[in-house]
Image (cartoon, rainbow, N blue to C red):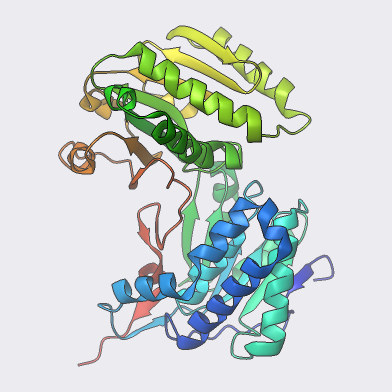
Length: 392
């Protein structure tokens, strides 16, 4: 495979499974966490800081404790990861999913040369060569331009595939031949939204509102709303309070103006998207802009295809309702993460379970939408990527 660039590891990879949450993997991730945290570049990349914090030993051991009820398990073998092109650190989480589940891994990273990928791969290579021979042939990170021939070859030798991307990409890759027991886990197009009690916003002190604005910023602007868990729609509930909503957006605007850097092409593309929505949508009540930093479109009603109406670079949709249950008829299996503020989480849990909703896999406070876990898109990853051995 001359067109494949091995960023970590080599073509002499191993396909043997091993025990989930092995001591060797936990030790490796702890070293990686510390090495990544020491890297001087990390201060420029909040997503790297989040990754180093996530894979620290204390957090991994907590995950292991939750997994321990499932005994006599071993990995599937070799997992081939096809990761998304727009989230720089996603490949690292996908790799960790595979390792903690007891699998050898081949991970395809985006073709775009994100600096975060370079930093992570350099640290992984350094650790694997000097400190962890057990995993040396169980981690291969590769890059190649989209080439079906190469993807088909890797698909034929793997025991499972983790496919991250758009629905079309997933369907194309699923059409490639695999061996009979191959398992595919697909993370496709998902839609996320946020629910806020507007009356509770009015009760916040300035510092409290500033902290909430920072959390909302982390959920959205840090990844340009590209993450499947980043909200596109804000649903305002509770007693109507126009001033509190305006106060919320002004706080977001002040922060975005100070911290957010739009890419060169983003302003024009963002404005074009705004115009397209205005021309296409028939349920718009109002449009408000905060310079070119925030566009928000208020909807007078939701529609069955609301999950297809998405924003980017700070373009949001709003909807107001006294009761969150009014949203239930619009939730389908595309809905992934529900972030919230000022609402009891048990009320939101009832919203999902009592209405027998097909969608919403996560309910987390504002600020935690990007906190990836071993339960993702409704999948318990260590269970699915390992097999149980019945012993009587």
